Amino acid sequence: VTSRPASVSVPPVLVKPYMNQDTNKYPNAMVIYAEISQGFLPVIGANVTAIVEDEKGKTEELELYDYGSGADILKYDGIYSRYFTSFTENGRYNLKVRVQGKDKTVRLVRRHSQALYIPGFVENGEIKMNSPRPEATEDEIQANLGSFSRVASGGSFVVSGVPSNPSDVFPPCQITDLEVELAADDDEFLLSWTAPGNDYDVGQAERYEIKMSENPLELRDASFDSATSVNTTGLTVEVAGVKQSFQYKSENLTKENGSSIYFAIRAIDGSNNKGKPSNAARAVVVFSTFYMILNGTPSVSDYGLFHGFQKF
Image 1 (cartoon, helix red, strand yellow):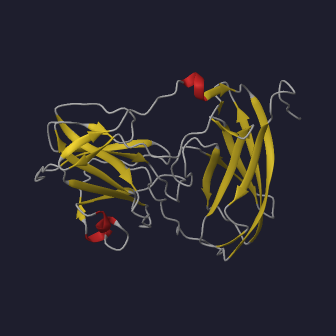
Image 2 (cartoon, one colour; image 1 turned 30 degrees about the vertical axis):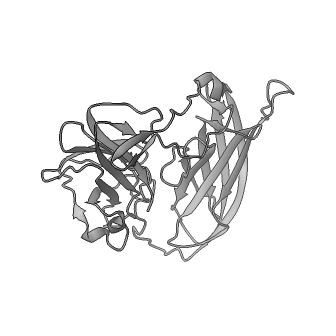
Image 3 (cartoon, helix red, strand yellow; image 1 turned 180 degrees about the vertical axis):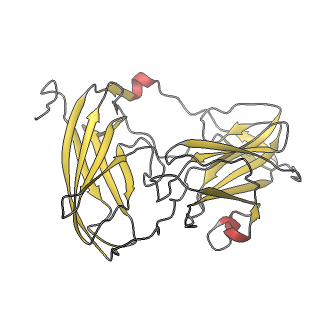
């Protein structure tokens, strides 16, 4: 079955599957990508499935996502991604990708700007506000594509070093979208992130470990264990890809104008495989104004913080 655009003047939806490398040595994970576009513009909201087949004909299906977490680098850029760790044997694996568009599948009329918008900054203890970022309407950025179906080959890759009875050696993936907010009237921090999996971005991890520090360098790999631990009692672990949050109350926090507090998190699976520490999420306490660095137009209250997230 061949699907075609409704009009010769309408560019077709193109599917380009590929992998991060052609050869791999166990226990390194592979990353599968599928770039979905129409007229060089990204298509978002599609159902994208990778089908990996080994030399004996055994297949493994894996949903690919464009959510900006796990193996996916940038949210809604039309590149759907996922880690692949289901190696059954040494040899060659073939990749095929199936894409289905539904009523909510859309093509972005223009690509998102990659520039980070900064709503304001602190200068000599005072907050200086930048002009609000112009907001585009949904009609200006999206065009509905309706239903469509595509199947494309992604070539093959070769894996070596797979043991006959592999154990659980794959850790949860690094969390890259940790954010933090501070309540205006107390010492409670609200942390949010996308849950990783048991094996990178597949499955469900066992537990989380959260650290805090006034120095973001202390939250890197080498010094993460020695940083101040956050009490995670009551924190549950969601299945990979689920957005979750955790509220933490600091009993001994000293609020000083302009002071920064950084948080980082990592996931640990049932075999005690530890993921890499996340990006360092920063909360900066300032008086008289509350605004958020990531949400465009600032919102104002009597007391609050400047907050954001960044990688270190």
